[in-house]
Length: 573
Image (cartoon, rainbow, N blue to C red; front, side):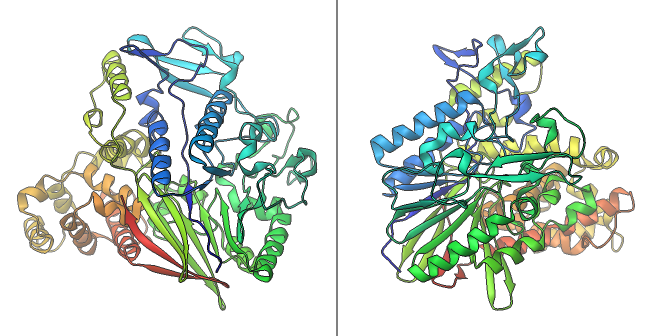
């Protein structure tokens, strides 16, 4: 293997500029003017917004300290593709390029761009005195208390790529090699493909932003635009947002159908890489294998067609990549830590899921090259200090609204704040939007003793609690203090973070959850009959695959490719 420099892989940075100008005054915290997204929206989102700038700068400072010069931005680099946001992000990345010689290679995510003409964005911010203010790019929504700003608009292809043009999307003079699936031209009009609605009534030529770049001799980065906007059946205004299926749940499943030329190009690139002795790394925003490695089977039984279920790649995706000769692939999108493998015959495909900077667990990846192969490290950023101005804005907002102050507003570290955000997410998103409302009403206030009392059909809940205490190392008092919401928060943390959750869930707690699952849980093959007891049994049963997956993640894993051996290391902070 050639002597290659390390690269950093950052997924789902979701940058929001706290100093943006969206044509409204914003909020002053002391002498500092800030443009702060509301906590009311934050607690219902799978990511935090206002902490993103600090998180991005912290990650890049870590990259610089390690002597890394190449950074892959694995999609969703912006909050929601707003014109103002992308311009601010461009300026920041240009600064790091000038001052620290960093080079960036970007991919579009579903939050960065939409279809051929873009779409409006409407967000809630904190105004003076803590009042919530709606800001939108849609003049049709103009009303009292609603501010209109054209800078909130999210552009489509190709305009939405232009602010990030120098970061891989278009040829740069210092690249050793650069191409697209269409050839060596970087003109927008030379990078289009035809896509048709399934009923044949709507036909478009859209731009594809995939590219291959050689930033260092012998290193090929294949950047796949798996952002697919398939036209809907029916009658629409040409190019309007409603005319396209959102790319969020489409990903590689839709790419196979709408962009088959990408697979032909990937196979050609992989073959050339082997022939020319290039080290090839493949990236896209969307996973090509289930990043949860099959452990979320209980979700369909418990909650039906959730976002996770809808976004899971079909087996045909893995088959297509294996046939194309792709041994490994880095993905973002679902804000999850995980490594998933699929073996077909004598070939293996590995998907390395990269966590987000703005969700639990906050982390990014480093890919290094040595004589033994490719080593992938996970770098956590949970120790960074919080922006006290943002926390002050949150307190002002909830006080103005008459809401209860959140414990997370007093957190001292980013990791602690994100854990509190997870709790808010359970209460305000999962319980409200995914969990059956009648089940939530019955069990949300239960403590662990009450859960055991509900489920124990053998020797009674007291004996069950004693058994749990003896096997977990926790006291009866500690066990009695565990509420259902505590269980649910750790359930989602394990689901998203795998082994990275072990930094926040003690060995005793993990053993408690395993023993709970063994005693009371059941697999997802058991149906839920509508009772709280049957729901809880399936829910608790899911802890075992979550814990097993996390335990496997602590091991050093070897990823075999056609040319190199890769090792995935445990997380560091």
